[in-house]
Image 1 (spheres, rainbow over the protein chains, first blue to last red):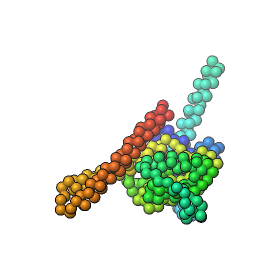
Image 2: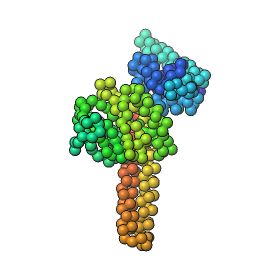
Image 3: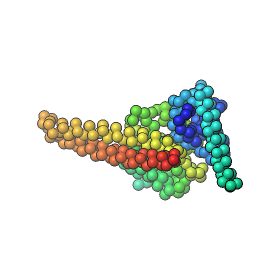
Image 4: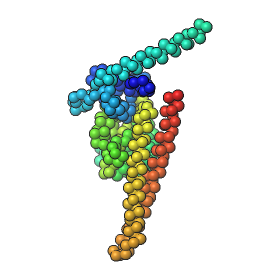
Length: 106
Length: 204
């Protein structure tokens, strides 16, 4: 993700986070539910579309098939995108806290 | 109508629903589910076989699996089917239809909670764009077929009146189905426009 590019969608962000270890489709769905404490429930259509987009962008790759199922893994480019997104989110939260806290103190 | 058939001797209900809008098929199946009928087979794209179930026991959802607007995407169908089955759904068998591999129709028990197969706006947009393209291409192909039949019917005298009647018939059916496909396409276009507005509102 470079300057001017939009923020990651929630689905893409959680899928990328899930793929620091290789996983197949349903494993990703479960992992996303775990990471988000059950709040994010990825539908099959959403996951399928997002995987295609992320592969096309070179942020994840298909690894060897395991039990006839395609597994995916995040790439170095994908990790850089996640790092940038975390920085962006941290800045959002910090700025939010500073303004809200400032208004309460003031 | 109710009769016995191959579904383990269970009394079945066979209903015909002729629609070119997948949402209407899904709504039809969900309506029957709410009345205590579970769809177990779809053939010819319009013959629905149901068996009894608890009222509202199942939720139906559908996904399109095509590439290049009209060609069934076997790999996508396979992968979506696996994902759906692993997440607790069952895929409704579709037989004797050209489009039987172009869409996945699945059921999941309502007791497992609310269920959607497209959980974000982008995937909903992709879904409806595929459906729109499929309907538009189908409408154009059928329109072309109908025009060819009509022109032939108007200009051909050689084969005799029976052939001419056939040609008029084929043209009429072609125009009718092309119109239905075009109507579905415009319905999808309206949904796409609404989703785009929704996405813009969320991005503000």
